[in-house]
Image (tube, rainbow, N blue to C red):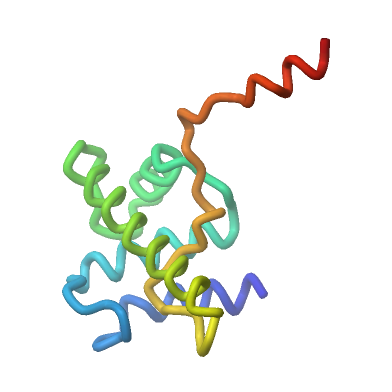
Length: 121
């Protein structure tokens, strides 16, 4: 399963005219594909963790600055929405090539559920 997902994410940068990717630049497709490769192996991650993982590996053109972080945020949001649209459509056909399962990313600022603490008392 993981090897299939890695292979799918490796092919994203090489694909053109993918369904649901109208308007995405090749560099955005490459970024989504690379992020997907990292997330297949290690998920969930926060956006910040993913940002530093991509930058520290130095395998694609990506810098450690606010514009790159914002670009990654937009790209992963687009990829998660594409995956969610596919899910809501009944997972008909093949999973969108430029997509990331929403559960593979977490909000690092999310607060604990207060009701959990109340039940422990």
